[in-house]
Amino acid sequence: MGYAKRTNNRGFDELRKIEAKTGVIKNADGSAYFKIGNTAAYAAVYGPRNLYPKFLQNPSTGILRCSYNMMPFSGTGERVRPGQSRRSREISLVTEKALLPVVDLKEFPNAVVDVFIELIETDAGSRCAGICAASMALADAGISMKDLVVAISVGKVDDKIAVDLDYDEEAYEGGPVSDIPIAIIPSTGEFSLLQMDGEISKEDLIKALSLCKKVVPKLYEIQKKALSEKYTKSD
Amino acid sequence: MGKLIIQDKAVVVPGETLAEGMDYLPGAGTYRLGDKILAEKLGLINIDGRALKLIPLSGRYAPKRNDVIICKVIDVTFGGWRFETNSAYSAMLSVKDATSDYIARGADLTSYFDIGDYVVAKITNVTSQKLVDLTTKGVGLKRLRGGRMIKVNSQKVPRIIGKQGSMVTMIKKATNCNIVVGQNGLIWLSGEPKDEVTAVSAIRMIEANSHIKGLTDKIKDYLGFTGEVGEPEHKEYEHKENEHKEYGHKEYESSQNDDNN
Image 1 (tube, rainbow over the protein chains, first blue to last red):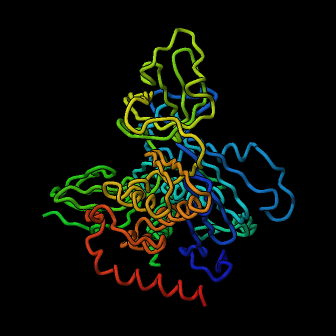
Image 2 (tube, each protein chain N blue to C red):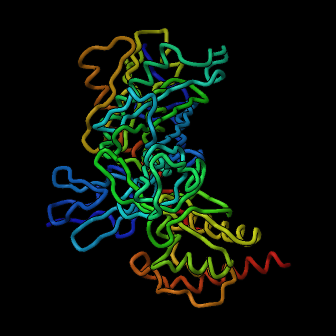
Image 3 (spheres, rainbow over the protein chains, first blue to last red):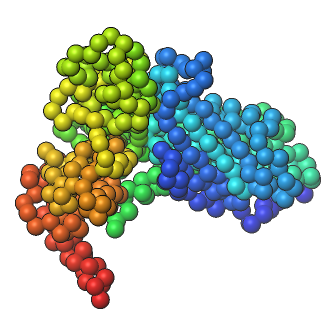
């Protein structure tokens, strides 16, 4: 028995269909759109700019401020209460921590770079889509970065290790499920986000993490293409 | 032996490997990781001998010493004015750097610059904490009256100015407008309203096509400018300009004919 076949006949190491664009929000200093399966995120970056209230200012470096938000209509249909929730504050925080190792804001003391992530459609993996969009938007905004950040979820559905879980898989009831969102810095292979929901054995966790490293180059290429497309288009 | 992975003038993204081995040197906008050189920003690569330099394509203005910028008065203090500079930091102009006139202590400074005024000023100093000092003593540094103000991406400003001012001079001559381009991406234009609109659309065209070869000719055709373009072309930016000259010219003519028909 076990979990034999994924929805849409996806392979266990296969990603959902991805769409990525940059420069989608003209007023922002940088912006990006990242859609993976039925999860779609917009990210807009403003700054470096003045930071107030003043007590938040850091004289030795600029700070990064992320905000993750799901649109009220984005989920499965039951209305999400707009505004901050405990969940969105946590995700804002981990997004910030996932992006911080690559961005260099030493040149901007006392200033802030604001990253706004809005999820217009969600079907699991929303924080990963948000981080992918945010890292592209930061690059589009001309922020100094060591690398882009690639984020994806892996997990174990019943007895199979799979990459990029959708909501049906996260909610699978035939056996134990684990959902592990990760973020990786491709040039060094370091993890900047590692969370888990559910249960998994130590051996399977290691297997899952090495599986997700296989798809990282694919995601990085998509991000790279979306960023350079804007400038290499022949007219 | 070092190996170059990208080509000259390629568009690169952060984290992209530019070269391997120790034969190349990381310049501005790049960094070394192990024996590789990686890009640190989104931009164009300029290979200068052994040095790899990255020209950013986007990003807000960062105040730099000796830049001439256009800024707006946001506050009038005891000894001077505070300006908004279209960057993360505001700038200060003290009375003694503003004018050689004698100003009595406690005089009303708003008769020189009032809140909301736009001023062309030069940056005299930027500290490590990004405190910016300005001066308005110098040629062309003044308060701007009338006209209109537009904002462009500050990374495109060198392209709008052109080599030794060739591009902006051409727009000025062709549209009979007075134009001041601030390094911070603010541009002031003053002329007949119709001409101002033409000049603004030409500037927007440069901003959108700044990475394209043969841009000066495209703009020249757009403006219907027949005089000499003041200075030689942007040789450091585009080596093969002549190849594309004809093409750009024809393309524009044909689209113009379509409009007429």
